[in-house]
Amino acid sequence: MSVAVRRRWRGAPAVAAAVVGFTGGLGAFGPAGPADAHFLGHDAVDGCEIRWEDESRWDTERQAAQRAWESLRADACVDLLPDAWNTNADLQWKDTRRSDVGWIGLYSNQDNADDIFLNAHYMEMESECVRQHVAMHELGHAHGLAHSSNNLYGNIMNNYRIPFCALKAHDIADYEALWGPSELPPRPSPGPPGTHPE
Image 1 (tube, rainbow, N blue to C red):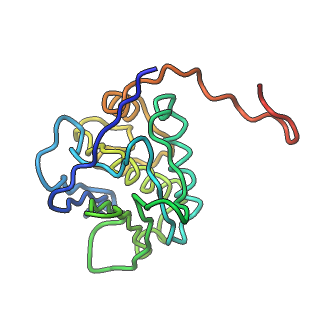
Image 2 (tube, rainbow, N blue to C red):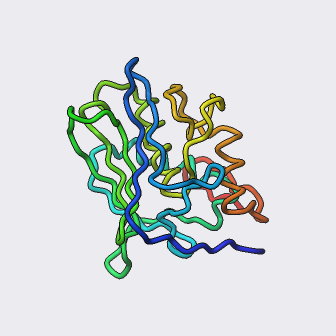
């Protein structure tokens, strides 16, 4: 099995945000610097993992985002793992409450651990599906994905708010183009309680 290992780009911090537009939808701030196709050129991946710390109250949304990206067969390379006492965090989930900005979620590439900020001012007004969409979108940035083209409706990494709660074909294609398809079989579904899939 071939495994893609990428180094994190560590220059000036870069920011990608999901912003609330004039109609209440998500608009776009592009990444700070040129993106190659739909890739940022930097990510929170360290080796083949993202070690995360959770300082956010939006656990349901974070968990849904992590399940979505981990469900990809290609995610055999990028494991999403909680930070431990003997590891360094690569990503921190944080809350903020700011009415003076237009973004609902923000990914910020830093010299140490990258940050995902979820803005309670806007998150509290949204449905669970939209909140999950925002968390998935920002975690996509942590994987190194940039905003998709404006005409590619129906994917998480699109610049606009289209309320759905699952990764779509274009998200998956961009992810696999960056991290490579997996040679592993699909992960088995968990069986009934007390059973172990073989």
